Structures are given as C-alpha cells and as structure tokens.
Amino acid sequence: MVKRKDVAKLAGVSEATVSRVFNNVTPLREETKRKVLDAAKQLNYYPNAIAQSFAKGKSRNIGVIVPFLPKIHLLSTYYFSEILSGIGMKLGERDYGLLLLFQPPNEKKDYVQLFHKQKVDGVIILGSQDTPGETESLNKLHEQGFPYCLVNQTFANFPFHSIDAQHYEGSYAAVSLLVEKGLKRIAFLNGPMRFSNSYERFAGYKDALKEAGITCSSNLLFEGNYSRTSGLKTAEQMANYMSEIDAVFSANDRMAVGLIHGLSELGYQVGQNYAIIGYDDSDIASLMKPQLSSVRVPLFDMGQQAAEKVLAMLDEGIHSPTQVRLPVTIIERDSIQMSEKEMD
Image (cartoon, rainbow, N blue to C red; front, side, top):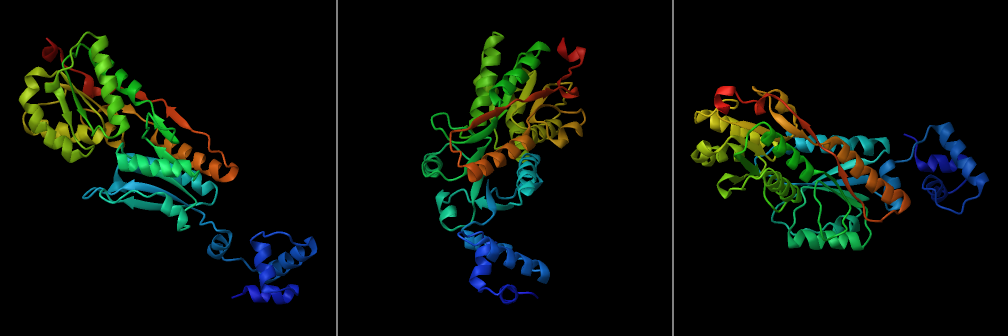
C-alpha cells in the first residue's frame, strides 16, 4: 500500500508538506503543490478521507436526529423513510454522510455538544416537540449559529430554521371535503398537541366545522400517538359514539389503518357505517380495501429542502431564519364514499 511518506520521498518534500497539499492548507508554492500531486498520481496514492476530515476539523457527516420510539421500527414507517430518503439523496450528491442519531425521550437535549465533539458538521432534527427543554436546546443551537434545520415542526414564537407542510390548510380541506359530501358529524383522531402539526390540524378541523356552521363536539375528539396501535385502541373508545359519527378525520394513515381494523372487529365498516380520510398518503393508503383517502404531504421534498438548507449554511454561512411551508394535496379515494342507504 502506498503511503504518504512514499509520495513525500518521490516529490522530494516532507510528509507534512504532502499533508498540507491534500488538506489545502495555505500558503503553498504552486511548484511544490504540482510536484506533490504529480508524485501522488504516479504512485496512485489517495489520501485517507477520514484523516482529511479530522485535519480540517470537519466530519463530512450531517446528523439526522430522530426520536427513539420503543417497539416501533422507525425506518420501516413511511413518514420517516420518505424524509430520510430525501435527506440522503441530497447529501449523497455532495458526498456528505448521513449519521442517524436516536434521541431517547427522557434524555436532556443538548444539540450543541454534537458540534463540540466534531461528530457532525450540521444537524437535521425530526420529531422535535414543543417542550421547555427542547426549546432551550434549540435556542442555544440557533443563537450560536450552528447549521441545523427542523423538519415538520415549527415554533411560532421562535425564528428556528424549519421545513414544514401546510398542515392547517390540509386539515381544513379534508374536513371541508367531508362536509361537502353531506357528512357533518365528523370525529377527529389527532396526535399529541406538543407537535405543531397536531395543533395546526386541530385548528384546521375546528375552522372547517365553524365555516360549515357545525359545532365542534368534545365527544368526537380523540388522541393517539401516530402509531397503528393507538388507532386500534381508539376504536374501543370511538365505538361508544358511532351512532353520532358520520365520518372520521385521522391525523395520519397509520392511526387510520389501526382504527379501521379496530372498528371492523366491532362491527363497523367503512362505507357502510362511516367514511374516513387519513393524512400523509402513505403507501398503505392505496392498498387498503376500500382504498383510503388521504392528504398527501411532500415528505421526500421536505427532507431534500432541509438538507439543502444545512448545506447552504455550511457553504455560504447563510443563517437568516428560514421557515418554509410546502403545499399538501387531497387524494380522494373510496373510503369517503358512503352508500345512499347509509346517507339517508
């Protein structure tokens, strides 16, 4: 194996000079640089990328922080896999690595220490929550000017960099569509309110009902944790109110699928007893019978744009607040079609 000392010997320079050439440390005479590069080419020498990164104080890794969710195969979920695919593709174009970092729920947040350890050059944060500890850690990250970006979480009172979707508009449009179809008693299965997208979807739901002159009933509000299991468990609660329900709006498809299965076991069928629309438009939506209507969220694009933001901060030092909202789309399928007999 060709080593740095071999290049130094052939070029007639020290090993330190070879290191300076490949790490682009100036000043260097052009003649010296040319001799080193010619010797390296002649010997077919390639510098160690990891060693170069340490020499430059850079890891060439972007950390992607995801929540640690027990009993859930995170990477198999449509939501996370789409966002990560978008991030990975954009980082790959620039020869950056993606370092997946799991954030235990009870561990104190300290994003800044990742940079102090030279573990990452930038971070993209998924699953951020509106809690005092989270806000404090993000504020330190932002004030110290480290490259970062949040995905699918916006803090209304802080200028944190974020790539999000138009969740209020998506929720409003979904509920309005159900109302247009004559379905007025609409239950809502939402996620925890510590997530901004849960709060925004609830606001869209309420405003759509208000616009239609429909009172928002607390009996028709349910909360899960965005898992299929939580949708399944909600079915037991919702069954007590099915005589009051025409349709259900679910804050994601995973909960919708669990709810559908749970209600089916209790004797309530989609299209006969109720209509339903989900959120995210995951792969499973079109595989369901009947197919699940859903709000399509551009998760892949959100991941790409978050990566672009962090890379721009690294390249150009652009730290002006960025809060982007990407549009969503209603995908109408059979799950919101009720038979005439049931509509009467």
